[in-house]
Amino acid sequence: MIVNGKETALLDDISLKEYLEKNGYDLTRIAVEKNGTIIQRQLFETERLCNGDKIEIVSFVGGG
Image (cartoon, rainbow, N blue to C red; front, side):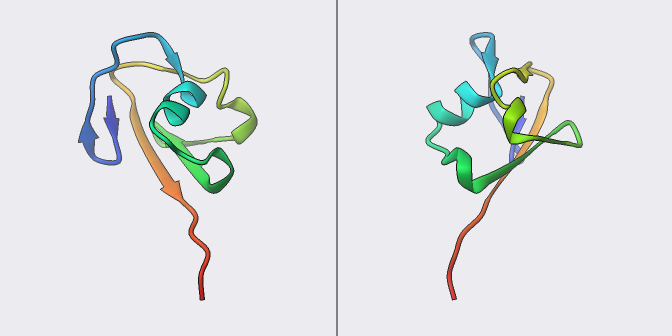
């Protein structure tokens, strides 16, 4: 699997939500694209990840 341009191996069958939580992402402040498609936040728990997936995670940062 490729996440934000870096190759990473999946060792377990895991949901997108589980992956994001394990890697310290704030689920309320990100957008995720999987294989070119934006994944709606309510689908994070049911969306499964595979080793061939390409994931892009964008964090929203406030400031002035």
